[in-house]
Image 1 (spheres, rainbow, N blue to C red):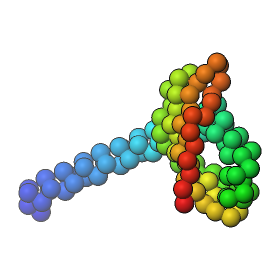
Image 2 (image 1 turned 45 degrees about the horizontal axis):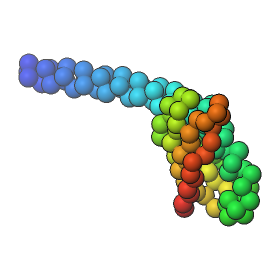
Image 3 (image 1 turned 135 degrees about the vertical axis):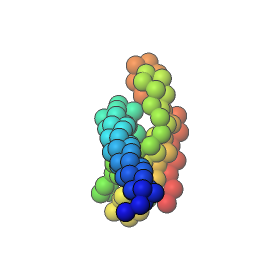
Length: 115
């Protein structure tokens, strides 16, 4: 084997190792963020609203599943913007919820959903 082929194989091996390490780190970070969102009072307030609002319930039906892939941002005791998918018995939608922390509790500023 020529030295050029050996060097290429070593470089490819190093690159694949680096990619694998960063992929694992990204997955762990992603899980940590989703866990932070899904355990937050802001998310719980959003879910409570979705479950108890008669207009939303009539359109999507009973909630069957809430996707674990929650995105957005959460500033503790200040504001939150959450985006998540909900599968209902009649419709599957993406919710976009804006919340503010007022008087020691999360309050919904706006909530939108679309197919």
